[in-house]
Length: 285
Image (cartoon, rainbow, N blue to C red; front, side):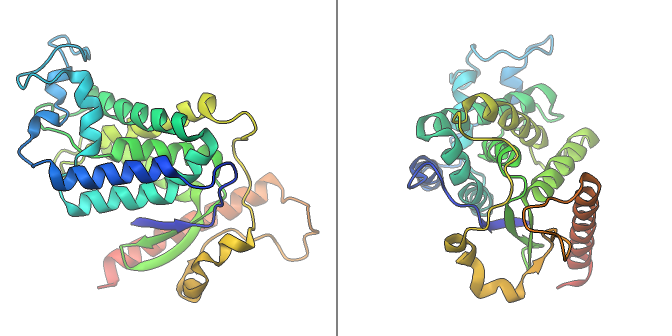
């Protein structure tokens, strides 16, 4: 599944210039850096010592220090689909996180989340000799921050890359966190996916967003109905399965539902989301 957009406006900045620059750097690096330049990839075995501890100072066989690969691996990708998936996701979630943090703190946040993902992969991976590349750890950090900032924001997702679904960010990102953690704990190595890098990125993003956000930016913000942005996917709304929890009919304006009612609504949306995924994967060609 792939997130393709949201209805969340910017409030502090006019444009997500740093987020756009990070996307551009990854795209340029994909076309300019040859796949054989393995020295810039993160090699877990280079970072993990004989005693199992993680060290980033010593250079490996390639001569590139471990701390440097914690940065460079983030901007390299193993294929076009790998690049496209990460960049589209970063495009969807990154602008609002940059809006909450500011330009320069967002750049620092991105690098730290990527490094945290790399360290988690180095410490916990079952394939220490397999080079790791990709912005997935940093992008996971961005999604983790988005989860704490805008859990109720409406996200548009392509389930199975075919069926469009709209649901709250909390359900989508929360499901991804649970899925990645389950896959990491299962010890899956056949897929060659750096599951622990994703998990480490999610955790780092949720931790870092708290001290790095602007003082006037609250956590767990409610969804906002902003007409100038909610029309963004108006042309396709008739084709979208909307799983966003709706307020009960007859509820007075400004009155929030009880906690129990909100929990039930979220559980219903999550169950329908999982059912749709299973149906798409099993029956939709």
